[in-house]
Image (cartoon, rainbow, N blue to C red; front, side, top):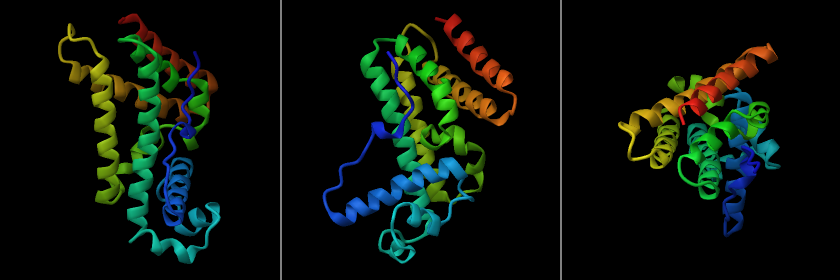
Length: 200
């Protein structure tokens, strides 16, 4: 079974033209913030990439931060959707191993634009507007709850274990992407996978 971290797995179904346009802007911004960071993502560039004029932006958003908050939420939703799909296809705690393997895969490593926003943007979050941080925090909590739901009741402190697993995945991917040494990048990911696989 091969599941790849890919934003195409979750698409909203807007009902009218304005909603379709709004969704296109948000989806474009969600890719752009992961690709270029919050500070490297300008309104004009997003509108151009979405095939729209800059002037139409304020018909959809009160501010750049409002758009970034929706983009952060969308990017987080895409990651949650992938985790839910894995959990729907794989039983019990085996789903957690599968999630870790997909998260730390070569495909996810190289596809920052469509991958997890936590690994792509986490270091920038403290400097963002409250609504952007709130949107991201809600998705982080949702991922923690999702992981916790698959941890066995026989284990103690499943909440803490969920925090450790999520922070290991995100931190490992962040470091693996940060280094310019491909072997070290692979070593980070393999060490994390071996550590969690050995605990099963």
